[in-house]
Image (cartoon, rainbow, N blue to C red; front, side, top):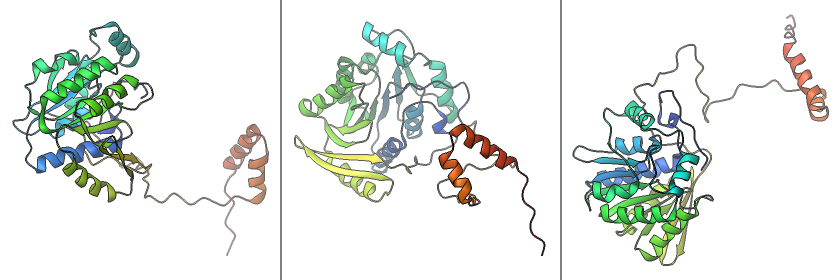
Length: 311
């Protein structure tokens, strides 16, 4: 996961918010949350580690009346131990609570409940057995992730869903160890795996897996494989290049393109026709040194258009 940089501009769309929330995970979050809502599942939403709010903004869109959405993050504050402080300085130096709140309020009328503290406090701040969806994306250190998973187990409803970020990233082996330890020894049952995240439950994963498989098989923009491992059915999905995130409301700062602005090209738009190059021009581009090729292109582009023949 590369380190994103905070932006001082107000976001107009969700993808304008800096952070690491790929389109495939936006699809999975949206589908799982809407599935809960369609079945009348009620409960709190919780995010441990929010960065600049990209995933929190989507989660907040699914908070219903009477449900509490809690976000817990250090927001650049003092970490509880030396290793955590070093990680915070390296990856999150640009993070501030003000930047998170500005981004969130661009899309929502009010903030979630914000706890500016290490994730270790969450068990004292949220009642056990009250959450339907927990997203863990705080520390990358094994001991912290292990404890965050334990807290999620206690806070979730019996069939609630937990999402673990960076469970197989090259630079976060502590997350991988804590995640698979939970699967092998602590009763966590995987629902599916994306490139960055493991989606799981301490309930029965089979009903949601069957519906998820049906949804994914209908999408041409996702790859899919199913593999057994240690008594678990692992549904692995990956995004194709043409995948797009699900529709999401614009922020209050969004400005539609004006009449003088050219619309952004899409994958379905037809590119403008190109004049075929002569054989000699193709050979020049292929064989001449780059500096000569660039000079030739400039000269050709500056040449006035050839007049049309009479008649």
